[in-house]
Length: 426
Ligand SMILES: Cc1ncc(COP(=O)(O)O)c(C=O)c1O
Image (tube, rainbow, N blue to C red; front, side, top):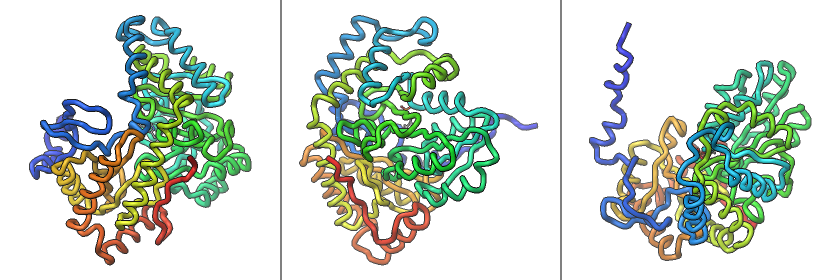
């Protein structure tokens, strides 16, 4: 026998980084206008947020949230199944279904709970999930909670998906292919048309997690299917409201009978309290803004194209990202922490991504851009990144850049020599 808490006492990883003065997590934000934050008394440009459309501080959104508090109070104090179902939740579901071009939607309290709840209730004992290796942790947890089996395929690699389908599909009854629409660390877009083709060939259903695609891809930000001009082709589309839609919550969209089943079976929906009124009202207003104010999406892509162009031009390896998520490949974990700390000291807030979130030796700095960033914000960020990139030997050093290109090729399947290209769809 041993003490259950022994592992907590011997957990040293975070303490080592803290002692070295380069711990980048849990920085308390004292105030923010979205694209700039004040931390430790100093203003810094935020390039570590998922506030893609910059709507967290939009006057219409703030007003809608305040009105909802006046009408419904601050919380729902229970599950929607029982006492917490507001007319506002249902209005939001109808509006989202229309926006996404779907028969029905169901909103959950968070995106994490959406993936967990849906995957665990929809996949039975004799079924299988085919899951991209770079899927988000909430999909991993959902697949672990599901009683069926999970088979992983190489990141966004359709030849590998077909290989595992050929090898295993006949062993199972139902099958679901699950993947992020935009991958949260590498910022690349799922090869959805090919997934749909394989799903038809091998009799699978398709589930797309559009957490980072909602508000970002497609003519009005409706997501990955719309980006490829194939709305309605995936069977289920999941989204979160913790990114472009400036709040918290999650949604699953699909056919009426499937959503009805999930509503009565997903334990993460039934046994967890409802999304608070201010959050539901915020998201409803964000959907209206996505439809009525195209300038936010246009600005997001203008900023995204600028940052891709400039960062690739400097020689950063951005892992083939095509979206506002632009990772900078650094390599060593410690170097990524040190780089992030220097950025912070120079007034830029970003976060490193280290193992196990990425393979050993492939640490990144994940940068992401918003519609509301000004040219002044972005030019400042570029100046600082170029200075530090050179100081750390990440750019301006051909042999190091070749090494990073090999790493990107080996671990992320990026084609050698191919730099990122923002999807030029807007
Ligand atoms: C791809 C993806 N799916 C799901 C989630 C979970 O969403 P939430 O933070 O709204 O719970 C996230 C959040 O980071 C995500 O990036």
